[in-house]
Image (tube, rainbow, N blue to C red; front, side, top):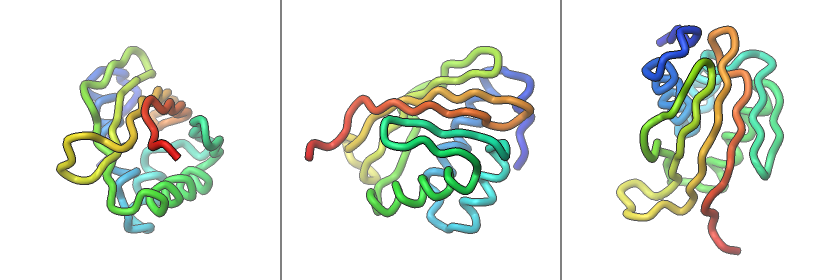
Length: 130
């Protein structure tokens, strides 16, 4: 499914956020890479407190590493997507399917350029204690 992200409407960026979460949940490497290639520009970047990934290969490797570290857990949107122009922000949860409380809570700010994700900045609001 291809989405025209240039319109910059809340609905379009909500769809992008959902597909973004889908990519983080996709455990089949081939299917995940297809989502990444669809969603991200070739020179995209993903930055959070733990990683600064540049390009689709590094973004794919980052997602694979998170999936390995948190095997069996799933990402979900934790509310509505707030957006304007080419920028969206949204909160997400990472936890066991059906759990009342997520293990990790964060929010991301995503910038779209040329119809694809160009930059994503992740923030961690709740992380497991060591």
